[in-house]
Image 1 (cartoon, rainbow, N blue to C red):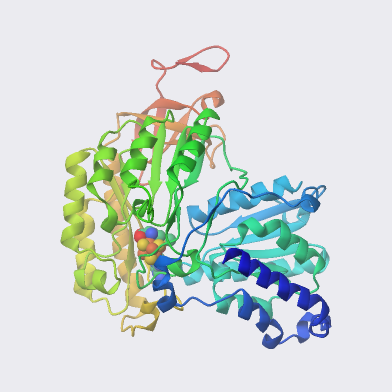
Image 2: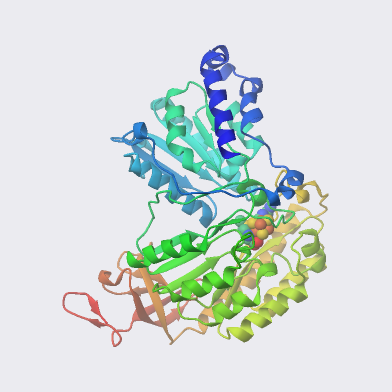
Length: 529
Ligand code: SAM
Ligand code: SF4
């Protein structure tokens, strides 16, 4: 299928450069949707929930054979790239892969727009405001493109997977040279080459549900913490969410590939990894040849000599006993679980297609607390789902109190084209949604502040990440439970885990003093444990 699509693509491209010359020669401003239509007949299909639901049986291929084509290996020498990332950790990590590929082509990274020969916007489609920000940025880049016509502007990520977005870019934003989807990252070298030499805008968005590309290079953003994908895609089809359409079907990486990657990171001195997936605890359910689930992977992570292992994001419905038992072992498996609940109302949860109830969520929380008594729980919540009543919203508020979430990402529901919820009538005004969000945030802030207070006077382990953004004389890092801690200390402890005594608790951060009896500060400024 993969190769077929590629061949189909290359046929179209050959055709374009010879037969369709007349259309290509038109100035971009004179092109119509028809001129772009061929892209959609060949490589692009709009999100289609009915089709997506039938995809379970499609085979997943794992590819270990990525390499930069010979002619592209020095293509970027003397050139610079800039990647601007929007949205979730998955996108952050995809950007690291794109950067890795570009660096193998000889490109250098820059943070200055004017210096860049290639700008990639790695986009997010989860809410409308995320999309608006990207369109704003595409608009800003127009002036840069006029000044420097050689600049290549590319749009990647989840927005590229949507037909309306691609159409809008093709019709109204001709400064964009290249649009590629979430399943096409491994094709970046070829796509850049095409964008450079083609007169038309280049679009490559495979609607294929996705294979797995194992050996893509990565330019990781730091040397302390690393993202590790364990699975891709999502088959849950929550009615409000675009992700199953933009990221393809659920597919797990082979355990040996993940274990090898984590071992390698540990050997390089990384102190923390986050196992990534839209649904980390569905991990392994797609394996047909082995019985190996998320809990088994956690057990294997527990054996690796890396101080901290986190994961993002589990689904309440898939949280099984195997995973809870593994987490209860502690060690490098940290006692913080981000467990998105979305709503406290059974009726809303049903209409969201979350496939759990308030009661089963609370039962899961009880089980987790029984196994891991010190666990910290955080969550995601959507307010203002279509027709949410005041009583249903109150049920969310009471659930937040009952569980005692220490923080929450809270969102106003944003209709996403192609999702079932977008077709639901909605009788809740934006004013009411905003007022509910504010009330929810006040409650979450109150609980966050209370949870922080209990740290005053206590000593916590902090993985020091660097200087604080606000004050370069202050160092900043995270506790095991993911609380930000600011303290004064020698720069040499950056990248280490140190004990810090908390002196002052704020709502979202803690201030403290480094404890020097566990780690002695020598005259050279270094801490010797
Ligand atoms: N897979 C995870 C889960 O099941 O909770 C979360 C992934 S999603 C990228 C992150 C969060 O965005 C969701 O938990 C949800 O709260 C929020 N979200 C997704 N679609 C949304 C929409 N249409 N409007 C508002 N918030 C949305
Ligand atoms: Fe979206 Fe998460 Fe639901 Fe998947 S499980 S559809 S990513 S909210």
